[in-house]
Length: 147
Image: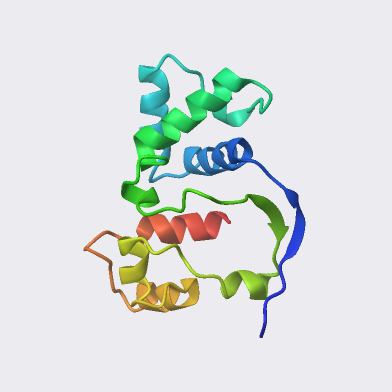
């Protein structure tokens, strides 16, 4: 089936960073690390839970936080080889379309999916008890249930 994504509108890098960090904050796997970085920088969680996209200083702080925790803008970790020129959009996908997306070419996701980068393949491998780089699958299973 050919997926036709419904583009809702143009977004911004600041909005993407805020959304990404909001999702990470609620993650059992990544939330505590974010909280530690926020505390070390004297920042409150409200920086992520109530992002003011019109505040340039707050946007800078969120980008710095995503850089420190996940390598955003530094060509490392999750954002290794991430394109420097991109356009951000808000989009709506059906469940079938979402099931047909592919993970980024990050080594963990490539390994977990058996090379296909498809979440459905990763799910089958997780159900079969396979792990990527011996990382436990429970956090992924819990995150999936939360969605």
